[in-house]
Image (cartoon, rainbow over the protein chains, first blue to last red):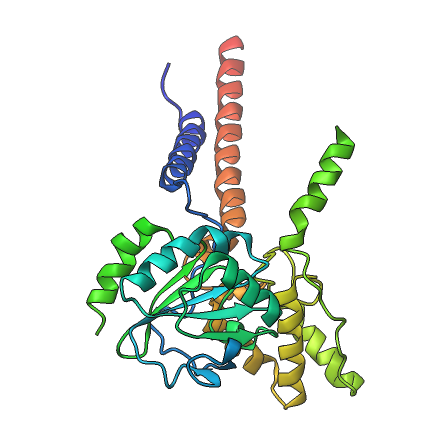
Length: 180
Length: 139
């Protein structure tokens, strides 16, 4: 029987679709959420963020204009379950001398303080953002999220979700060391 | 079992169920309507399937407040839209602008109909020709 295009074309389309889905499926890996939104702020200058700080450490306000880059900016909250998961990584990085600043998002300062007492406090300063003003400015869609601010004041890396050790080693650390 | 599942839901929600204060509407009804019209075109980045006008997510509530503030300060739809796009990218628009590969997505059904139609037309023509040739054989 001759292969007729009417039969071949739909079959070919089917095969191509399966192949495309296969590629997408293969690119999924544990710990990588394919639904997370692409960042709109990477490589853009860090917007000016001024927030009152928690417990009067490092000045009365957290002002991105006054912070000395490079540093990590981490959005968290005591209500955020996944933040507990990444907290040891931040603690470890802070111990290694990486400057980590925090933004406590939509959180009662008393709750934030209690949470930091319970889980340890890796932050040099913690800004309090109760109405999402700073968080929207940063293009944040959930907690936790972490930014790497380079020496040039630009956002070098924006990670949505839990900060894993391997992510730091493989993607953020090279940027940290090479920050222009 | 079902009861257990329902109870499980209550166990899981506290992380998400933050107190959201009721919206403070703009005193000017026209401005309020305009703010809500804009809010309906912006995607809630937490829930993604909803606009920030209808979402109960705390971030959506804060974004509504921000849109209201911008409108009250005289910002038009375009200004609010570009503000959000700069921070969240095109995904923040519920109706993303037609560009690049999106054209293909929109034109795909039309393309499918045209290609399919051509294929059907061809098959039918061959069918008719085939009928005629067999007719002529029989005669």
